[in-house]
Amino acid sequence: MPQPPSNPRAVNRDCSWRVAENLLTSFQYAWAGVSYAFRTQRNFRIHVALGCIVAIASAILRVSAIEAAILAIVICLVLVLELLNTALESVVDLTVQQTYHELAKVAKDCAAGAVLIAAISSLIVGASIFVPRLAAILA
Image (cartoon, rainbow, N blue to C red; front, side):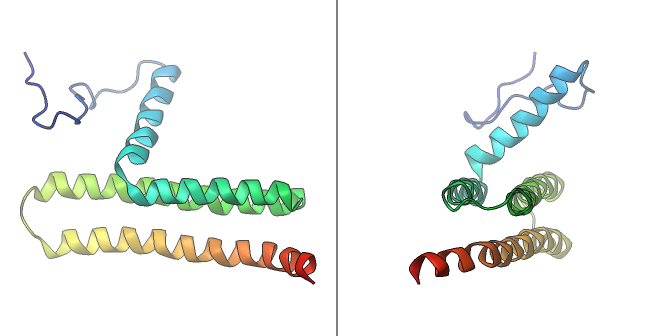
């Protein structure tokens, strides 16, 4: 019989190596990953909150459909990269466990750098869409 996880907040994933039996199970696994990231990763929660603020601002400022699509793409890109960063960090931690390895640091830093570049790019895109509208309102 499998032992319960030593961490009470850890999820028991005895069968995590198995392929999903059907499409619904695949979606449940995917949602479990998003849910895990939201519960455990501060930066993911920050990006979700900022994405919601941008969506609300888009509706208030009545951005065009194309601009809304562009904003949605950059928001989703940041979230996807944050999820990949979390996955990579988990795999690296599993591999090196409690030891330090310079290549593990490189892998984690590069993944975090990818999120950073996407976040900066999304700020530039958001500014190019919102600043002219806000300037017109304030003028």
